[in-house]
Image 1 (cartoon, helix red, strand yellow):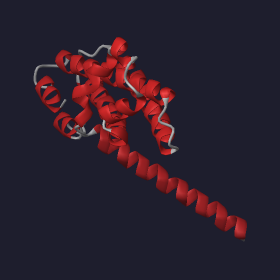
Image 2 (cartoon, rainbow, N blue to C red; image 1 turned 135 degrees about the vertical axis):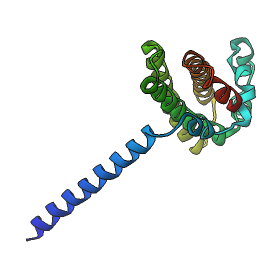
Image 3 (cartoon, rainbow, N blue to C red; image 1 turned 90 degrees about the horizontal axis):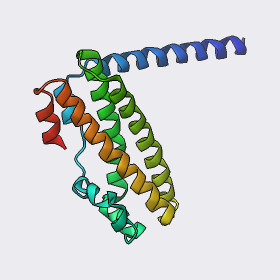
Length: 172
């Protein structure tokens, strides 16, 4: 009797999860471009991202300065969330436009994955109080991927029509 109740509970829980995930997937697919652009999180450190990509200067920047330069955990989390939003923008362009470049979409997906992995690693290290040279290297790599992803998303917006590009450029 107990086994039947457990099985029924697992089946009902699984069905609820599948229904909720399906509804969430449908909502994400129906989002308009303007909604995607407005869901980008502004980051105070975005203006300084290019500064940390110059490898000569990067050698003389301490991990603590890098951490402050990207606005710490908030800046990393904004990169994490913006990577997801830019990936949704790429998916939107892929489904709603005939002028998408499959290699560009694939590069955006790789960048989003790399950013998310690196941000999680950097945040876990900072939580443990290990803001050291390896954390600085992770922050530099995440920042480089983020800047590349912003450039690729801007390129994607320009390829898919002038109406999409201004909204994205103004938000970044």
